[in-house]
Image 1 (tube, helix red, strand yellow):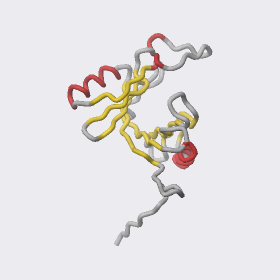
Image 2 (cartoon, rainbow, N blue to C red; image 1 turned 90 degrees about the vertical axis):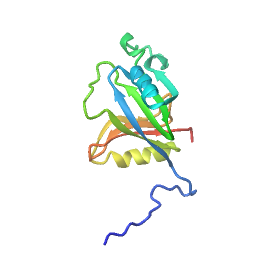
Image 3 (tube, rainbow, N blue to C red; image 1 turned 180 degrees about the horizontal axis):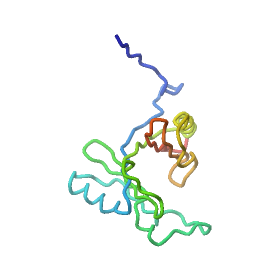
Image 4 (cartoon, rainbow, N blue to C red; image 1 turned 120 degrees about the vertical axis):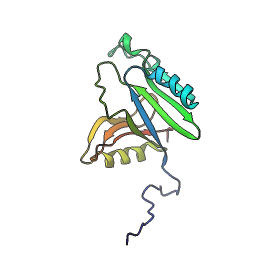
Length: 158
């Protein structure tokens, strides 16, 4: 007989949840805006936000290629009561069938995001080290030891 034990592993000392959500994340190969429109029409998706790579702050050391400017950096949609996110690959980065859906783990504290990221990377592979970005105080991408791709992101500056 298997017993299930409820643990408070994902609880902070203050008693609040540190993980605020798990969201499916679709990756497209340059046709992200078309995919957003498709999901709006097919599923009644409501676009909460959509940013392109061209919306990012410029970096003179790494100029943005023209073909990247209209690709989707991040789109957040709501379908019924569920959230879904989507982005395009960056031009020149490989698009691999089987990796079109990842899991975005939303966390409410940067230190907790880093702790979770460090646990997920054990025997896994880091794609993007967890770091501050212009959209998140702590964001990183990692494939865990089971081959699951995670995007760990902090939602607010805490």
